[in-house]
Amino acid sequence: MATKQQPRRSRPRSVTRMDRTRVARTLRELVPSSARTHLRQARREVLLALRDVLDHAISRAEAAGRARRLRRIKVE
Image 1 (cartoon, rainbow, N blue to C red):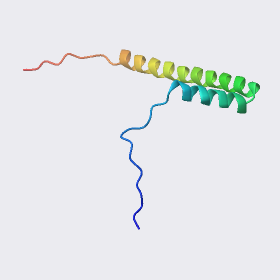
Image 2 (spheres, one colour):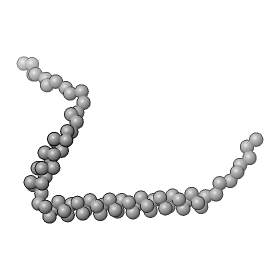
Image 3 (tube, rainbow, N blue to C red):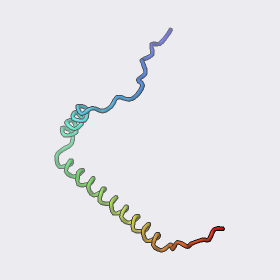
Image 4 (tube, rainbow, N blue to C red):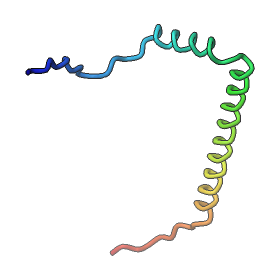
């Protein structure tokens, strides 16, 4: 008995604006307003923490760069 194969797509379908609108509408219906506000504030806090981590890493990299002096090496 032969099984019927479904045609393969060459690449995944892109998400359209209408799809994003449907997802947003569904989330608005499922998630209460207070929870959405809390999630928005939590996302902001995560981004601020990430910025702090990056600022610290940049400061350390800059300090290490200043601490290392370049020496001229004579090449014959």
